[in-house]
Image (cartoon, rainbow, N blue to C red; front, side, top):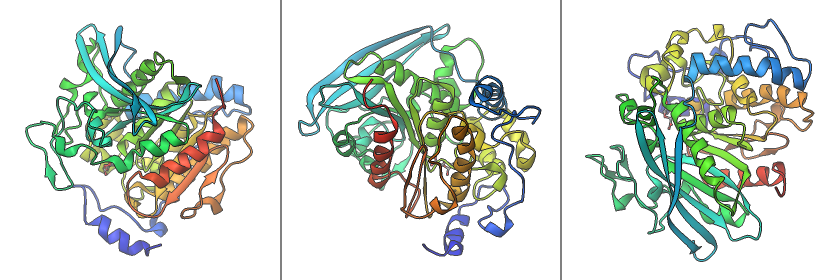
Length: 420
Ligand code: GCU
């Protein structure tokens, strides 16, 4: 592994304007005790069994994260329409089925549509499916010329190609295919589905995309992009429930970085998800906030206030006083299979904080009878832990690549029920 100090200099070169410099020194991590994973946020009750945790602790933890961190999740829309707008039984060189499903959501103030791209293995039984949002448009996830481009994309620059005027370009086709190794996923017996995240809530980064987001269809005022993106994953799951070749009881929410925070949120708040993968999700994802290592509440709420409830800002610099930490967010997925992945050079996301958070959340899994849970020696580069929960730290940078998917597939092949 590269010496931590060298990585730290590289990362510290990208400070968040106005925020204190990020800490990358383990010896400066505050010694703040973590809230007990088995207790309610004010500590007034501690569960001694799974039923007590489910009925008395879980609702209070969920309430904390909704009110103080992510905002309230939008409700299921009053009306939804699912239309297969394109399909092939001979995709990816004949190995897969492809479906592109237009999802129209409608509520009191109007409607919105977005397209879900879905690949499924050609198998006699309905397949388990990984579903995640993508950063650059469905067409950026694979070179497949049939993938429909979104109508609006965020202005960005990738591989030297600059997007301006919010117009999608053919040049982005397949540009992020390393993050979506569909053929590999299909060969492991899983399907994969994705939606462009800005179709749900435009991530303008420097301004709030809420007016163009799915929130605009609802009468009640709502905020927080992560909660909206997570709601989008639930609409993908609704759509998968209409596809006979997909097993909607075995759908795993997956995501990288801000979309890893999103995948975790989706599985936490929609218990139809059979499991979750949180890849390099960092601050307000898997990483423990109390460590204040890499990105902090101060930095994230300064740079990306629109991702969260406005209440989160008041905890900036006061992480040790927060009534709950991210291990309790991870625990909301219990007892369903959960996989946390880190990358060794991704110090901004605090790999150790992600691992320790999973280890703490494991106490809730243990309440449900899980025995094969991670311990300190499993925090090691490219030695995946595949137990009742899963963890690996890939060598390298902030990304989601084939190595990560290989391990997700190994874990969920074991952790999900074999058939429905
Ligand atoms: C920024 C942000 C992170 C986020 C990441 C991403 O680095 O600070 O919190 O996870 O973007 O989504 O790529």
